[in-house]
Image 1 (cartoon, rainbow, N blue to C red):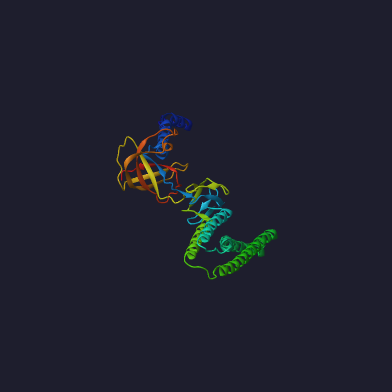
Image 2 (image 1 turned 120 degrees about the vertical axis):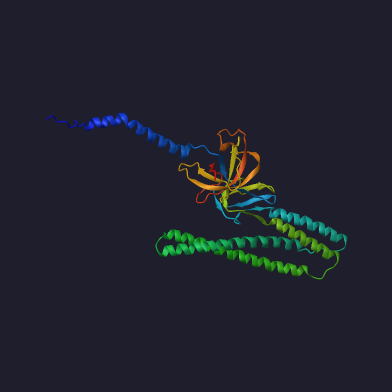
Length: 357
């Protein structure tokens, strides 16, 4: 009998047939899937572009004067209410000169009315200014003592556990002792000034002519207080939590009232500003769902909502749509909520897409 069993096909022949007939189709399907994934994650056209809101605060000088202190540099983190510097409106020598001129004018007025000016008024004014200056320095150094004490106690505990070197411990100990000595010296100077002022005031309070003499005394006191206020350093306070992005002046430079000395960029991101370029195929509405996608390498995506829609078209930032910064284009701006769970930085560019919900 004849053997009718089929002739077995060698595996090499089956592999050759697979490579010729099926492999191109499988490769085509894989390439299409990969292209679709890339298109969805990277190349998918966006409905609108957006920029994370960036709020900047300008710390300005309130008076004309000299920037005597500045404790921040670019990229320094600051807290709301923190003092970052001070401006001295008038130099002490100029204040004394102004007071001397005012007292000379009042002395002339007293002479015209037959009254004499107490000779120690100028000394009282000078001592009062020096006392206020010493008092301000004393408060600053007391705060410094508290800080040095905290650092010393921390280093002492670490030194006892042999976590730091003896040289470092001695350095902190000397700094703490120096700060305490400075406070004690300033306190002694302040007490001495108070004693001198008490004696001068008692001498000045001797019985004298009343009437116009009292009015002139009040004018002297008012002028003295005005100059004393001008002689005090005006503090510069951080208006919000953020990071210093620009420092325009350095200590020792002259500043004018209204000059922006420091610019603080807030780190608290609250919303995204999106721009719909023309032509507008779909007008957005409040509460429309928007997909927010970052332009970073990881391309994270999250959902957000439209909070507000602008009533007019405005010029958008050219950097959002083109490297050509001279290109001007109007777009409709919308306010978009911050996506939950997505970390964004102020000024960061993002892509936005309407989802139809």
